Length: 245
Ligand code: ADP
Ligand code: MG
Image (tube, rainbow, N blue to C red; front, top):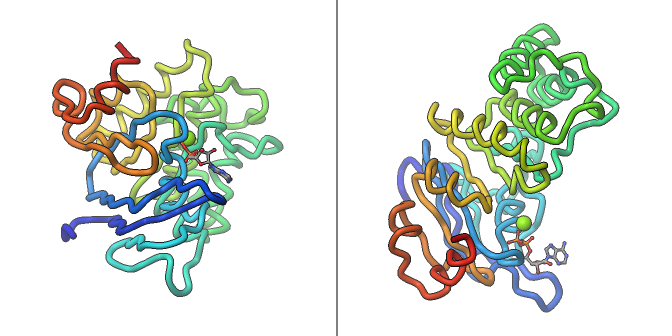
């Protein structure tokens, strides 16, 4: 394990019934890395992210967060999920709350920040994602692209150490995808540690420090964007990438 690893995963296993979804996965994420995870639908990408965020309970293996196994002993889920934030394909905003309230609630409830402090932080990140003007709008009125930018701001408000993104643009109309990818690119350039499941290959090529190709519950191949996109070694990586040409 690298001394700067935030997350180190050893021998991770997860099945749903007879279906082995994660089959002895080894994975690590170091501070400052931008990791993209690519692979066919059903290969286990979401399950891997969901295990890291403790939305799924693995059947075996270890998930070390700063060297401590989060699958053992007492762990405060809300605190863990503020440090290891997640942005979902379906946004998961509170629809009955305003944009600003969405960005404040976790800060107040989990981080025990004052309303003033929470508001200041929320406005800072809403400005960053270009959604400041919508602070008092009801979330339900927003377009998908706007909702996703709010969801990213909400996650950033918790001062995460690493942010997980599960296909953040897959549910968006094509004209909204660019705005969300631009925000993510900016965050990557600023040094945020990110793990991103995506089918946007050009984006993955441009922002990643490391690309991971998953196939049938294992990490089949990983490397720099140049290695994976320009010189893949495995037949199944080549076949997968063919579909995007
Ligand atoms: P990916 O994100 O790569 O498309 P997933 O991790 O979502 O893959 O799913 C991997 C496999 O596990 C799929 O076959 C999916 O149907 C199955 N699966 C995922 N979640 C569940 C669940 N809660 N119950 C049963 N099967 C599931
Ligand atoms: Mg998925």
